[in-house]
Picture 1 (cartoon, protein in one colour):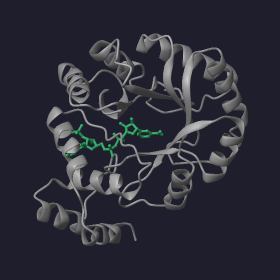
Picture 2 (cartoon, protein in one colour; picture 1 turned 60 degrees about the horizontal axis):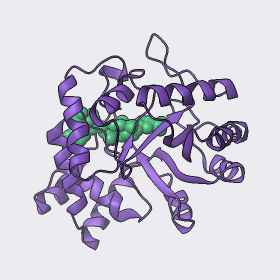
Picture 3 (cartoon, helix red, strand yellow; picture 1 turned 180 degrees about the vertical axis):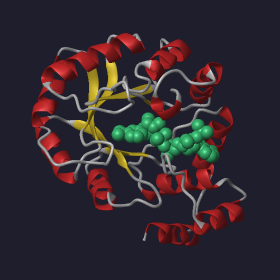
Picture 4 (tube, protein in one colour; picture 1 turned 120 degrees about the horizontal axis):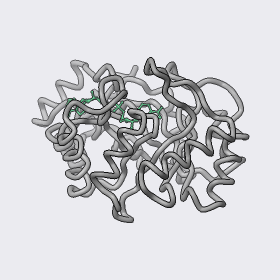
Length: 263
Ligand SMILES: NC(=O)c1ccc[n+]([C@@H]2O[C@H](COP(=O)([O-])OP(=O)(O)OC[C@H]3O[C@@H](n4cnc5c(N)ncnc54)[C@H](OP(=O)(O)O)[C@@H]3O)[C@@H](O)[C@H]2O)c1
């Protein structure tokens, strides 16, 4: 999401930098990239295509459907069967692939998950999966009830919701999904539009001679084996700092200090 222009609209200020982030990520062994046709709109998908096409089979490019963009930068809901079909086809076209690796059905809105049935949307995506246009399905910005409902309509491999050191309302859901072998992908892992800042985070980072962002990511990786990360960045320097988080091993004491942030 950070590769498009300000507020995820239009082209990035540093196009070459955005391409460099994607190529550096894959060359350093990152195998999980998150995108959406709504980013730009279309801008991020086209950058991924330019930088990586054809992406190696080991790399999974996850996209999402469920919203369009309007001229003011809003994210109007669009999840009728026709909307979803159109979005899947435009993702295929802008990414330049014959099959999407993973499509998340995004519910909710900019304020977070909203109640409402997800069944019809999942059934449409299952039809598209049967047509060979989608490899795997997931859900995003959902309530725990919608996860349960979605799982009755389709086998899902991941849930992508807002979660980080300071926002932990999905703790129980993460544990349930882990028990069933379903991945949990936190969005805003670094705090999103309001980057994480806390004395406890700075203290642990200082002790480890690491950056606070790398420590925030290390905490997520240690939180549960089913957590897969998608921190957003437009800069190669930040990408490298974030990858360093994967090598950090937090002590029980560090984890207890960091846990205090979310309480
Ligand atoms: N499903 C959904 O509804 C949904 C909603 C939001 C996001 N997402 C997905 O989740 C991904 C992650 O969320 P996000 O990008 O919004 O938020 P994020 O990863 O929590 O934070 C991104 C912000 O942190 C900055 N940053 C990254 N690495 C840093 C570092 N090492 N030091 C200092 N600042 C750093 C980025 O700026 P720089 O560019 O300067 O590094 C950017 O401002 C998105 O890219 C998108 O793919 C999904």
